[in-house]
Amino acid sequence: MIYPILTPEEAASFVQNGMNVGVSGFTVPGNPKVVPPAIAAKAHNEHEAGREFKINLFSGASTNDFTDGALSREHAINFRAPYQSLPELRKRINADELHYNDRHLSEMAQEFRYGFYGKMDIAIVEVQSITDDGELVLGTAVGNTPTWLQMADKVIIELNDQIPESIRGLHDIYVPLDPPMRREIPIYHASDRAGTVTAHVDPKKVLGVVRTSMPLGMSSGFTPVDDVTRKIGENVCEFLVNEMKQGRIPSSFLPIQSGVGNIANAVLDALEHSEDIPAFEMYTEVVQDSVLKLLESGHCKFASTCSMTFSHDAMMEFFAKPELHDKLLMRPSEISNHPEIIRRLGVISMNTAIEADIYGNINSSHVSGTRLMNGIGGSGDFTRNAYTSIFLCPSIKKDDCISTIVPMVTHCDHTGHSVDIIVTDQGVADLRFKDPIQSAEEIIEKAAHPIYRPLLRDYLHLSKGGHIKMNPDTALAFHSALAKEGDMRKADFSHLM
Image (cartoon, rainbow, N blue to C red; front, top):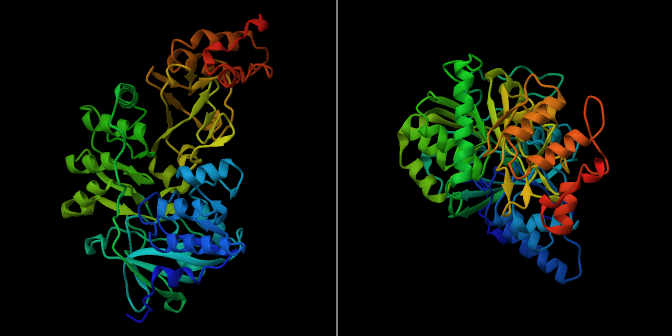
């Protein structure tokens, strides 16, 4: 190997205050795991000496505790984009201690190439292997890594010996040309390969290689399916089956996109056990443990993704079954989430909401409109371009004190223009071919919990307006009652009578 072998501390010495740093991966998989903690340790020493040390950190999506966690604890992040999910980082963001830009995941790489964020000083990339001429076999996620390798002045490689050689061939590395030279992306089926199995870096950029031996998957899977999430999954299946019966979905079915988390896992579990849903493909940004079961059973014929967001046990199971390797491809996030491909393939999108209002507007990122949860992620990429866009949430939370169906969302990530279907444990609200008032009635009667339907009906029928009825004094009455009384049921609309 022509590259210097570095310790994590030696690699961290190249990272200076104020630098733009890109990291590989997408969600927990594929992220560097030993250099970021060394950078955090350097930040600690610099701060102890009274010197400023913060970096601007760019990723594919959320990262791991080694990156966002370690750096946040040492106050070493000045700016962060495009997505996060670590409690420590979230706490810093909500305390206004660092700058966070919540971006659509499909746009991050191209915006960096366009020059919107300045230059990238250093990229830190986890790989399975690197050759002397700069050919890289990436790890268990791709994210924005191909663009970071292209744009970074210098590159630090984490060579992880826990990534098996059999991962070679699971990547499809394709970076589109930038306008005005961009052409169509040649993906016409979820299984089509558009690029190469390896990424590439100019060997002259490589500062060195850090050898690691770190676990690949998440430490644990998601919470098991419960009665509420099971019912949501069943409602989704019933809706999709009816769409096929009505001829609105082809009998051969369409590709599925599913977000990450417990509700998404429950929906995929329901799809696996449905006798009426035919075998399908996935064109999505993450695959979870439930997708592994779908691939094994044949219910999922092929999965195109950006990241294998498996638990550690599921990751080891996947690599132990080479017969599954022809059923999966990992792509850069700007390709896994690309509007052109999503619309061409007719992807059915399914994403979770924090809350939805009676007009179909969706809040997927901020609790009570102010406190960031995770971010918009790829939900907008898929929702705005889906064949049918579906949002999922339980109808109530916190011992019935919170309704997820509210008069007006406190933060809007997706307007009702982009939302077709809202599914809760109560039922399915179909917003297609309905005006705003009809949509509101549909959501109240089909998606809201019975406890909250009378209050929502009062708000709708007592508010004034034209095309949309809204009362600015009481639109956030649910949230005011929650803040003051700890219970949305104490919202009062009697003064509107």
